[in-house]
Image 1 (cartoon, rainbow, N blue to C red):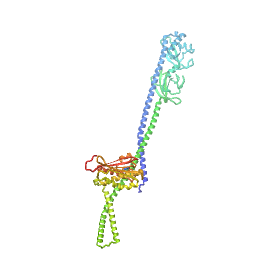
Image 2 (spheres, rainbow, N blue to C red):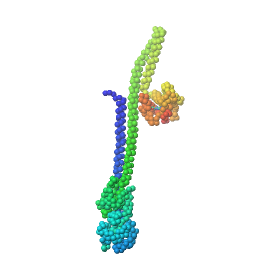
Image 3 (spheres, rainbow, N blue to C red):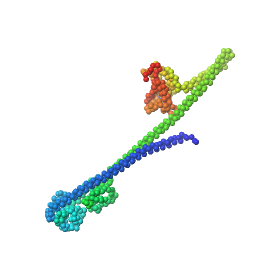
Image 4 (cartoon, rainbow, N blue to C red):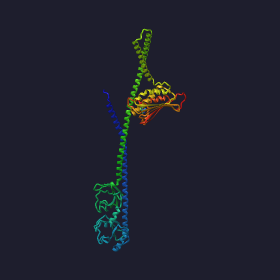
Length: 578
Ligand code: ADP
């Protein structure tokens, strides 16, 4: 099986991110979007239903009120005529002057009357007051006359009659009069029209009257003259009292909301209608609003989903990179530990043969000097060279044993050896080690060490390790900011009033970001590239100082510099104030 390459691994991770992104986007868009759309649809449905209900009941109310008003008008006009018939005889009213006087009084009561006529039992127009010449005309066969003679009163449809102009009449024939005679008045169509038309519904609503054959009995505001047959499909209520509401359309296909009711015992139909557009305008507005809100809401949801998903994925990527770095660092650290262990074992193993070589070398040196003293070995150039070689061997052996001792010392770091430590000495040792690095990188090392700083109680090697690490970090930060010139590193040490010893290491390096300050002492936190930093230095330093009863703090400003402050209790033997 061929090993997985880095590119394959990367592609695999990219695919994983893509599918996670899809899943998150799907959840974030559809989970809120579906209830959002459903609630909008439910809201729209309920609004539409209640609006339809309110439009319908409003029209029903209008048509009902209007019917009452028109019927009252007819009742009043009929009672006007009945009153005349009760008050005068046929003979009295047959006199044109008398009739004129009665008509003028009648017009005072209602301007709707346009003429007045009196008819005898045979339908002969015996007297007339009005603009036409109708006296003497015979109406025996006229429908209105026959109906009036049969019923007590009668209201005609619009008809042309002798005058050849559209009009309608109200005729009354009282049973109490003997012989029966008829009084008839024409109703001014304009006055009646305006009475019927006066309904206002929305912008374009209107009212008009048709007879049972659909012939207009009043003018229609939107078009339609008296006696015209309408171009629309109107539904007629099945009984007197019923108000019918329905939606229908005219010949152009325009839809209207209708309310109809019978007038005068199923003779005329009162129609109130309003274009559907007009009646349902609030619904249309609500629909536009809901549509707008839905689109906007949808965009907001989708926008938030994309933004949040992007952030989640970015964070995941960052965490994954950090995890990878951590794993690499862990591997590096464990390798270092193994290497340390190996080095310690190696040093231990080398140390024994070294001791033997050293002993043997001392023995050879003793023998050579004894032989020299006994005069067996004469002073010669060769003897001098032999002595030089022996000295050289001794020197190299002691160098080797120094190295092995250092390795062994390093491997024993975890076991602190507590003693009274003069920090000044440690500082000067560490400075000696760092001098070269500072010099090479143009870093100005400054010291401000108070001469009467007391010693502290701790492990000198560990303290050395702490200071070395702080120096190193400070120099790295300084080099990162200034390169090979302009770096400054000041080491200050003094005794504080509470009896503690304070060492501060201040640099003018890159400084530490605010958000990193919290993580500074956590293991494996590093901003250095892989292979350079392990992120263990400060956490180990913190642990060491803590174990000595001290404190380690840092103050920093990004782009300005950092100061690490080590505080340790002085080893006075007295109880120290914290
Ligand atoms: P490492 O040096 O291996 O990164 P440390 O624990 O010693 O690990 O340091 C952790 C991190 O703290 C460093 O990577 C660096 O970002 C920051 N740091 C430490 N000392 C300083 C300093 N003097 N100036 C700026 N940053 C610092």
